[in-house]
Image 1: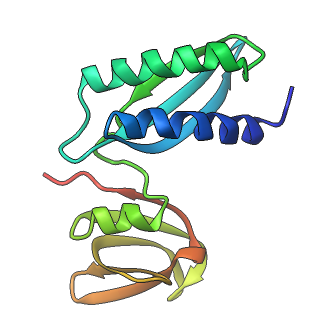
Image 2 (image 1 turned 90 degrees about the horizontal axis):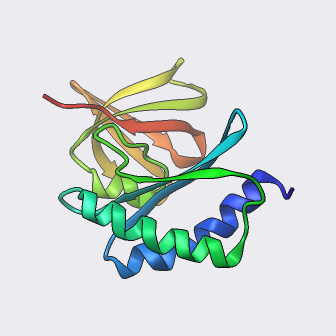
Image 3 (image 1 turned 45 degrees about the vertical axis):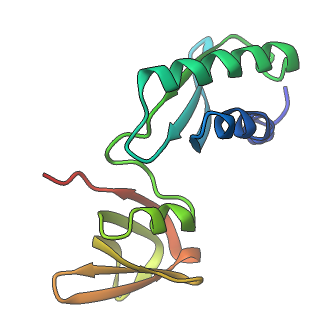
Length: 154
């Protein structure tokens, strides 16, 4: 079997036009082992959120495409869903889209003597993101971000 990341990359290339044709955004593709069966999880999104119908249409088209392409050589379950309220932020465009929203960022090394930042996405530049936490502004370069996600707001 090919490397899992190579399979995910191939699936991503196949799925992107399907998702785009439905006027949706492809957020992430995951292929995860779970015992004897694998899970192929595809996260989609759009302004205002995705519907069950969106997930069903994408699922049908992805199933057809993967059946023809035969990329995954072991049993798997396909799941198509929304990234949820605490969605991961992976690309510059994710941070731009959610400017003004609360997020949590974990950095790969210490910045300002710490590696965890919480606050509102204040600004997005070519180099990174600025997070406003109370009266402080934290500038975090994209290359330093290990993990980032939105935080649920009441």
